[in-house]
Length: 220
Image: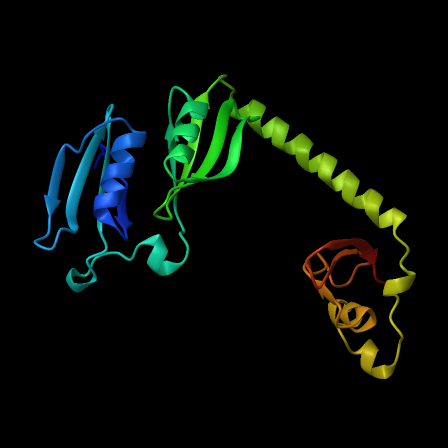
């Protein structure tokens, strides 16, 4: 079997407004638009270059897919390549979309932005600016992780472990390292990362109640 095309099919909470929005930002009219008797969109198809985009209202009485507005979130981002990332990002913003990430040149060779449209769908907008091989991309990512690991270890050395040292008792000795650290820090603190190996003296990340990172600690 050969897959010939992937077509995103968007479910929206206001089909007519969505048709207007996508018509404006993609500068095209629907190739086909079918409406329900009450005016909701049963099916809309856009043809944009050599790609297609479908959308419809939720239509729950017909088993339709809930929209991001109904779900309160979305689990899918639509990633598109265009000739001008900045221009499309600006057009979407001018038509009511929220820019989640401003256009920026990325290490994998594209200029990239993230946008959430007025109907809750998230878009990754990219313009290819440089061809980079998979091996080069992997090398850059590896160096990024190495730098992060070095910073992590540096933070561990700089932090005093005194404030995290547990007050040992029979009960504390029976706790896991994470539980003992939590006990020592008190309810003000939350621990986001478990030890990589419970039998080793390793760093644990500590966060305050507001989610601010307090630092890295070692717990013997």
